Image (cartoon, rainbow, N blue to C red; front, side, top):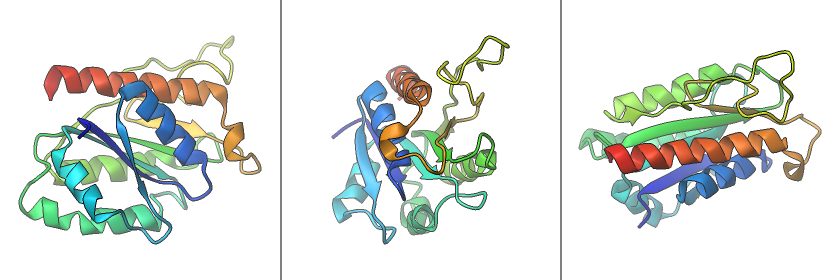
Amino acid sequence: MSKIVIVYHSGYGHTRKIAEAVAEGSGGTLLAIDAEGSIPEAGWEQLAAARTIVFGSPTYMGSVSWQFKKLADASSKPWFTQQWKDKLAAGFTNSATMNGDKLSTLHYLFTLSQQHSMLWVGTGMMPSNAKESTRNDLNFVGSSSGLMTTTPSNASADEVVPGDIATAKAFGQRVAAATAKFA
């Protein structure tokens, strides 16, 4: 089993593209939450065996999707036995606007990790915030606490901003390095 599992929900495919880039950068395994908010029974075994769990959800109305929330609520079983204690955790989100209250979603993911007694990994990236910065620079959205990406509401999943894909891969590499060092 993979040391790193990326468990995510994607409503329209944009968050899936980000999850795939995180997986590519980290060498991790994807575990999709379906439209009903469920994962395969073997998915719980994957999460139990992982050293690092990366949580991903689109930001809908300032928080995670209800499908992700269903998984989080179901994680009370591993919480009760502290099954994820001292695993590394990280998180990412995507929404249509540059802000979109994405930080609320990352705080939700962080809080979930802390309830499970996990250790959080941030992006470890400086923001691209100089006037010559462009939308395709690494960490243009400028998040430190977790990965934030932005896809216009009328863009297809194949039109995710290349800079966000590159940032997601770099975030995955950061997660992989932390896993190698601490997990």
